[in-house]
View 1 (cartoon, rainbow, N blue to C red):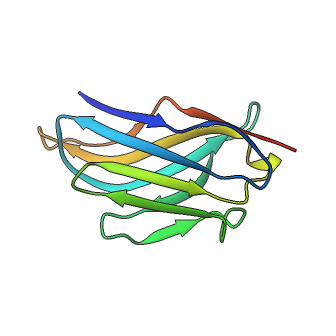
View 2 (view 1 turned 90 degrees about the vertical axis):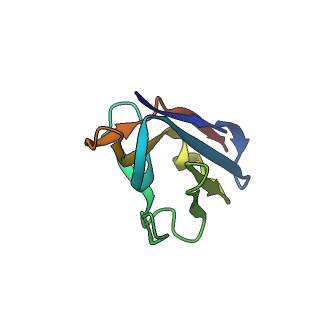
Length: 120
């Protein structure tokens, strides 16, 4: 079994910072792209940032210059450093990963989500 577990969400004032972490565990052979998405109730889940196994990144326009995605391949971790937070960043943030398990099955996985609330 494979699990993605997020941590680091919470309540912060506008202009503040938070760092989200996501740990992948289980019967993992390799991890390809990892990423963060967010969702507001009643709206579609949207991409925040993604990072390839080689470190290539892409960001949603709304977070460029404020958020930074990084990963530790050895520890199977992905991070999202969020600076200059705005109330419109309030959402549930989900970790996502494309990985191959020990049975050579390639699949996309989601974490359970962590709430980020930015007060004005």
